[in-house]
Image (cartoon, rainbow, N blue to C red):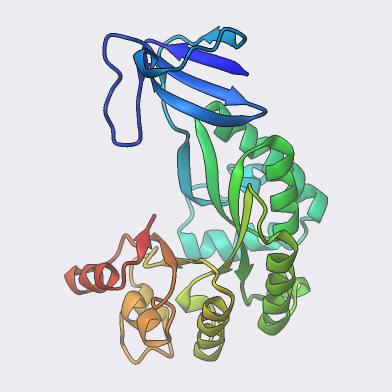
Length: 269
C-alpha cells in the first residue's frame, strides 16, 4: 500500500484539511481511505509518498469530445453550423477506430495531467473510447452519437446506430471504469420520430442521454418539427427529458427553459 501525505486535503464537501496533513491510502490502484492524518490508522508497512500542495478528488469533465484533439484548430473562428458541416464532420467521416482510440489516449493524458479523472464522452466508435479509457486508467461514460448527416453515412441509419449502442452497452455492462450512454447530437439534427425512438430506447436500457441543447443562437428556427417550441420544450415533448439526461451548453435559454430543465432534473454541462 502507498500512503500519500499532503499539507492539505480537500474533501468532497469542500472542507480544507486543517493544521495536520491529509492522508490518502491507495492499495492496488484503489483509494481505500482518505482523511485527516490525525484520524489515519497506523500503517508501518506502507510506502510514504509526500505530495506538495493539496490532495483533492479528481475533477469531472461533464461534456467531452476527447478524440477531437486530433482536429484541434481546424475551422477555428467559424460559427458552429459551418464549423460542423464544412470542417469537422467531413474530417470525422474519415476517422478510423484506431484514430479515435489513439486520440482518446492522447487527450486523456492531457486531462489526467490537469486533474480530470472522469469524462462524459460524446464521440464515435464508443468501443475504442472505452478501450482507451481502460488502457490509460480513467473513468468514462462513452455516449455513442446518434447523428444523421451525409458526411457520416458510414455509421448507418439511426436504427443501426441504436443497435450498435445496445450491443456496446451489453459488452461493457458492470465494468468498473466504463459506462455506456447514448448521445443524440441535437434536436435540430434528428427527425422527431428518431428522437422519440431514442427517448424510448434510453428508458428501456437505463442509459444516460447526453445531447447538445440551445448551443447556438436562433436554434429554435432550426427545429422544423417543433411547432415553434424552444429546444428544451421540444425535447421534453418528445420524451428526452424524462429520464437521465445531461444537456450540453444550454447557452441560449430563457427563464421558461431554465424552469423546465430544473423541473425535469436535467443536468446541464
